[in-house]
Length: 277
Image 1: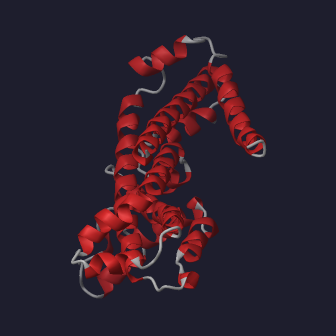
Image 2: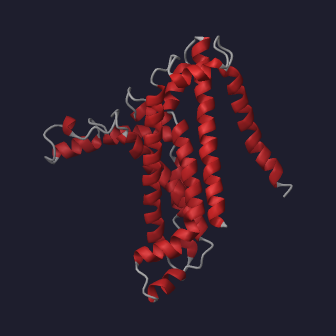
Image 3: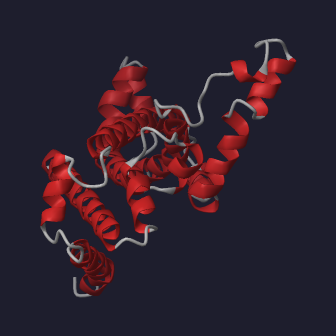
């Protein structure tokens, strides 16, 4: 127990210090504490605040739910087909996908792949599926955020799969065979055998993914449109401004993002704990 305390402090203290420093920075401008009121009522330099909030939450919710459903399908398929030996666990493969490819690198790769002048568009044009490369669906810099959703789904799915496979490693591999011999179909085995085991790990990793999407800057800068913009991009742009008032507004945005992530993380943790009990 005592060994856990220093580890928690190493994680928590820098986070708390960072948020505290950002809070102080947000009140250094001429508006002071009033910067938050101006931001929320639309009187600050960020006239697109609520539009960016809605867009950020829409991209975060959509990508998190799709990644969660895709991860559940992949994990369920592996759970029902895995051999008795656990040496062939895909966790190492998916873990390598998570850590070996940075978000900026993957966003650049997707830009080359799915843009209207990218590899897929040229391939579709070469085989006659479209009359010209510009006829390819607009997935990059589109106002609906489809390119961002593709990025986050493909990048966060391996992360959720790793957490779910780790949870399944505590379960005997023969339970699916027992359920199948009793007449349970695929969906019933997912519902009663796989899902109860992976639910806490998957929900927790999905919450982490959602919080990351709200704060991520790399992918929106590469794949996002000029309007609407993710809230993190708005904050990053304001931080680059020389004006103290603009930097205070950017710091206030950072504090609000941290509070939103903490709120959803806390609610999710309470939900997971209640489900476990």
